[in-house]
Amino acid sequence: MNSKNLLYDAMFDLADRYALSGMYAEVLGIMGRIDLNDVDASQKPTYYHIYNTLYNGMEASSDDKVLAAEYRRLKSRYRSLLLETLGKDDISHIYVETEIKLEEKGKEQEVIWLLQPMCESDALSVHERGIIYYILAKAWLESGNREKAILYFAKSALHDMKIPVKEYKSLYELAGLLYDCGDIGRAYAYITRSLND
Image (cartoon, rainbow, N blue to C red):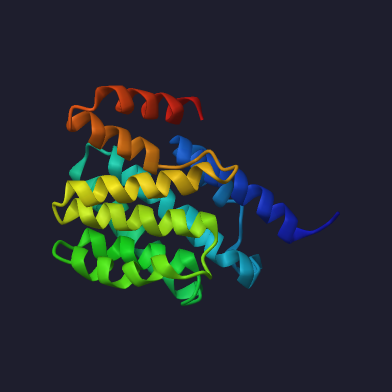
């Protein structure tokens, strides 16, 4: 079709899958073939998102403190660029902004106050509501309230199950918390469902 945008979309999709699968060299190979100056403005958030995901994964899997610090710096750089390209009303903007706040200790309550009113909004899609509940669960967990975390992971998982997307985190996280609480049967059922999906 001779469309650079469609070609980049396909390359971004592949790079995103590889980044989530830990195939970091392949991601760098694909992204290295893309000239940012040729990328359409509407595709730039995806470009920055992929690099953010890549360096987040590389930081998490690195045993070398010097390399991990460099990956953290690069992740922070691309996350800042991503935040700049996203509209304030975009659910991804909220996700990235709250992710930054949750990395700073003591900001959990701020995230809860920001997101709690959003749960009542009719403007959210099922998928977006699942994301908001997931972030709230993480904030409650970081603040030390496991019961609220379990509640919001469960709400998020319910919304995740309503859409045909099988790349969710809520049910997996919920299974871990239930296991820690001694609810082995449900933990096993939930982790099995997550693995099957």
